[in-house]
Length: 80
Image (cartoon, rainbow, N blue to C red; front, side):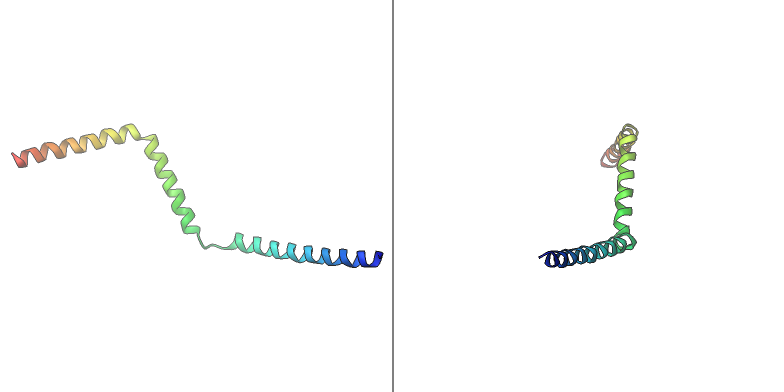
């Protein structure tokens, strides 16, 4: 009976070791894989741009307001 238990435990230990090696291999493969780096870079750039918009919101609002005021004034001159 004890031998059967020992053999069963050995099988379990080997299975766990094999899966551990497989997981370590997959983790290393994932960390070294450079596919998708472009996506991460694009997301970081978008986050930075959104942050800049939030920081300079008041200045951007004033700038856009002045641009549209100029457009409307010039359009009124053209249409008479």
